[in-house]
Image (cartoon, rainbow, N blue to C red; front, side, top):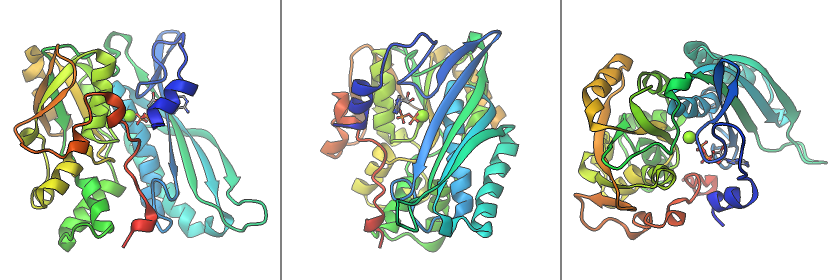
Length: 337
Ligand code: ADP
Ligand code: MG
């Protein structure tokens, strides 16, 4: 069973709210306002190594939530922090680094910590258990500019922010699948450990983007979510998908895997009418984030990767979406070299 089958079978229920399971944020009408609410959990051994820099963990735990708010075009308002910590690692240095980076990002984005929960992570009789961090973030959306994953229309342009694939390349490097130079390794690791949520861009695209999602599980899989929920297909020009010099330099199979199916990018993927092109470039310029048009949406369903021959068959399994929803990028600490 894939992650998405599990959610669909056991947890997806019709909701009376504006938007619920299946989107980056739930949208809840609250009087004059609409609240965007999202939660993300990071677990040791699944999302990060045991020896993770606690500062990067504090940053990333909030960043991945703010990235969902960015997709919804919401302005961050506040968040709750649930923390399960093994006592041996709950020392002042760890907690100072973790909370320092968390509050640095929170302050920058104007998002206040308003509550949470803290427990000891240890099985009965054991001294130590895994660290788990779960953040729930709340933002505000203007009702006139609500957007989710389902508003894409045939004929819309398909855009992405930033560059894709470097976080997956950092993982490949950590596993010894590729050897990067020291500077490139540091740059890619930064992308993996210190993702920058595109909140400003998400806000600037209000009223312009017809649908958006943040790319957390890889371009093909996350685009598949938009296509499925919007009932459209897409032609993607693979050579136009933006990538760093470091990724460009690695061999083609790995390069395409990182670019198209890598995880942890936290860039925005969005769709918009071609009539908005100029306004979209202006919005991106205003928010200081690069954007690239990588294709367009079609009436014909399915995803077509164009401009590159012989793309790995596992990346082509996206026509039926179950094949593309393999859950988060496999972050298997035992494979670290
Ligand atoms: P994202 O990557 O944007 O955080 P996910 O891919 O993790 O979203 O989840 C897909 C959708 O399923 C989201 O709408 C999320 O809210 C919902 N979801 C995930 N897990 C559960 C769960 N246990 N119960 C209800 N909804 C869930
Ligand atoms: Mg998301």
